[in-house]
Amino acid sequence: MNGSARDGAGVAPLCALDDVPDGGGLEAAATILVLRRGDDAWAYRNVCPHFSIPLNYEPDTFWAYGGELVMCAHHSAMFRFDDGVCVDGPCLGARLTPVPIRIENRRILIDDGGDTHD
Image 1 (cartoon, rainbow, N blue to C red):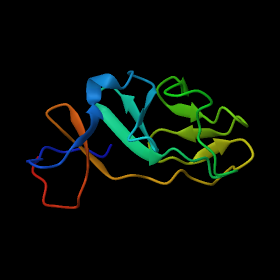
Image 2: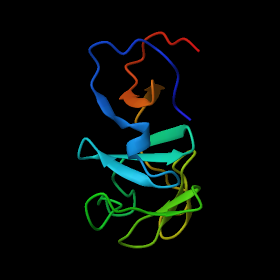
Image 3: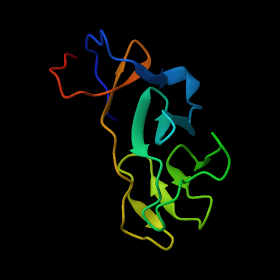
Image 4: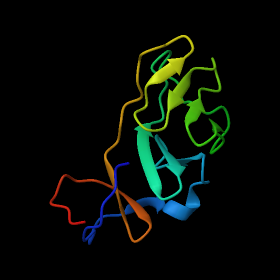
């Protein structure tokens, strides 16, 4: 998970943690996929490494399985939530490009690399 408590003054959130379906994904900031499992969240560029196209076919519709894998709707590549690695499909071993985030007060923010506090 990319997430820790920190003062996020002046930083616009990508979304609320509760906006992301538990075990699923949400399209945030047009090109970012946010995945959630419980209180954990991960963010990646919404671009499949196979053909450089979005993972979803329709806006905000992602095919997620068991809160563990998200599938590219175009050619069925399967990526792990935890690290974005493709574990099945035409781009096996490739990975999604991570977007660093943190979770603060149940809001998901892009992590600007500042100091964090637990």
